[in-house]
Structures are given as C-alpha cells and as structure tokens.
Amino acid sequence: MVSGFSHRTTTLLGRIAVSRVLRGQRRPDGRVKSSQFSHLARKFLSLVDTPGEINLHHLMIVTSDSDRNNLKRLAKARQRCAAKILELYKMAGAGHIGSSLSCLEILVDLCFGRMEKHDVLVLSKGHAAAALYTTLSLSDRLPETELSTFYKDGTVLSAHPPCSGAIRAIPFGTGSLGHGLGLACGIAFSCRFTGKSFKVFAVLSDGDCNEGATWEAALFARQQKLSALTVVVDLNGVQGIGYTKNILNLEPIVDKWTSFGFAVAVADDGNDFGSLCRAHEAVKNSAEPRCIIARTVKGHGISYMENRVEWHYLPMKDEQYAQALSELADAGLH
Image 1 (tube, one colour):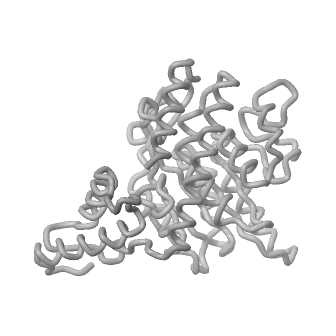
Image 2: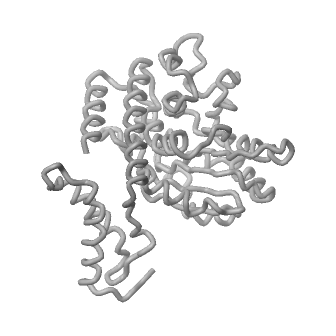
Image 3: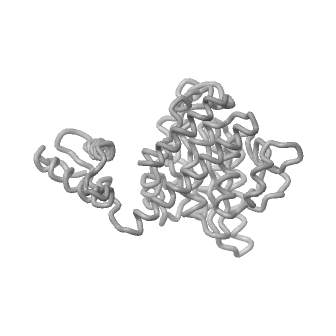
C-alpha cells in the first residue's frame, strides 16, 4: 500500500489506468460505450481504500494482446457453457441452476485455461453437476453428445456426478458435502508413491466448509505438504436452506484457511476471469497447498436468480428460461 497520494495524483493514475484499458475497448469509430467507461471508473474507485491511499498491487491492468485474447476466449467459453447449462436444466425440469452459475467461471478457468491433460478436478459441490458436465464436454474432456442424456433414465450424467467411474474426467461421485477435499487429498498424496506428476483442483462450496471432514482433510493436506493441491472455494454466501452468515458463519474465512497452513489468495470477484487469474498467480509458486477464496454470486448473470436462496432448487418456467437466455445474450454483447 502506498499512502500520501493527493487527490490530483490519484485522479491522474485513474485516468492513465482507464485509458490503457480503453485502447482495446474502443468502437471502430473511436468512441467508447458509456457503460464500459462507467464499469472501469467504478473498478478504479474500488481500488482506493481510503482517501489518499491506493493499492498499487491491485492496479495491475491487463494490457498485452495475449492476456486480453485469453480473457476474451474464456468469456466466450463461459457464454457457450452458460447457454448449454440453461438448456440442460430446462429440458430436465430440474433445479440447482444457481449453484451451477456461481461456480461456472471457476470451472471454465480451470478446464479451458489452467488444467493440463493429466490434471485432476474434483467438484465437491456435486449439485452443480450440469456446470461440470458442460465445461468438461466443451473443453473436449467428455463427448458432447452425452449432454443430451442429462437427467434421463439410464444416463451417466445424473443430478450429481456419477460414482461408477464411467466418465474418466470425473474420478469420484460427489454431492454429499464435505468429502470432495478428502478425495482430492488422496489423489494428490498418491503422487508420492506412483512417481506421477500432475495438479489436483478441488472446488468446494459454503456447505462443504460447514463440514468437519473438510477441515480434517485440510489438516492432512498441510501435514503432508500436498503442493500439487489447489482448493477453490466457491463462496457465494447461499446454501440449500438459507444464507451462510445465518446458518454457520464462515468468516473470517481467509484466516481459517491460513491457520490451517494453506497459501491463501482471494478473488474478490470470483465471477471475473481476471480476478481469478490474479488469485491463482499470487499463490502458484507456494510449496504448501493453496486455497483460492472466490467470492461469487449465486445464479450469477441471471437477474432474478442472483443471491436468491430459492434458486438453489427451483426449475425454470418457460418465461423464466426465455428471460435468462435474453439476459445471457445481452451480456455477450458488452
């Protein structure tokens, strides 16, 4: 943190930062959409912690063509996955839509950008299975034709990830919360005996962090120095029967994971690929197991679902499905 900036200096830094971003955001006629500028202005102001203080570390603006192209690629993948998730849930007449949308950026970031061929992903919050199936499929880890069988009789794409081992990219069935991290730890621990080298990612929920087995596994991970392990907590603040803060408050959650010996980074906007990238980068060289706290929004991207407890379960009606697709299409235009 650097203090002592005058208002004039802070304003100048803001103009420089925003202008650098806008070079890649202009229309063909040279103008910038007012909504884009407003978003960037709000983003800059959020970096000023108190009058006269600015967090220069977080004022890192993505400017290289490769970084911008990668973020665009991930955003397009997210758009395709979100549309498919909505389609799958509408066809099935099923719920858990909000849970899938809150962790979608986390899964897209992993499956389309971060994971290599032999890396392993464990989705502990198995009720978000449609998000997992979709990201695996569209990233060529599961035949896309299988998606049409979602929730149907005889399918391997059930409401929760299957226990049968029928899908190579899904090592375990999950959904009874609290077990995913232990399973991921076992996979990471196996490297010590097989000589194989790969990374293991475990995606947890608020509900997972209410379970004692999760914290037993965290102790084990630190004790065994499982440096191949990265935990991503999809912290959307909502659980099956209410808001986390009212059920079993997890805060200060960063302190908890730190005290268990993890290298911890926070993605303040876990539904933003840039924020996720910065968090992963901050801990990628740690010799200890890592934990990314991704602060997300339940039902992200669909206005009537966002931060609503009922969208842990509800299926969509026809008019709700149409509205969701419309909002998704509008978001893709920005």
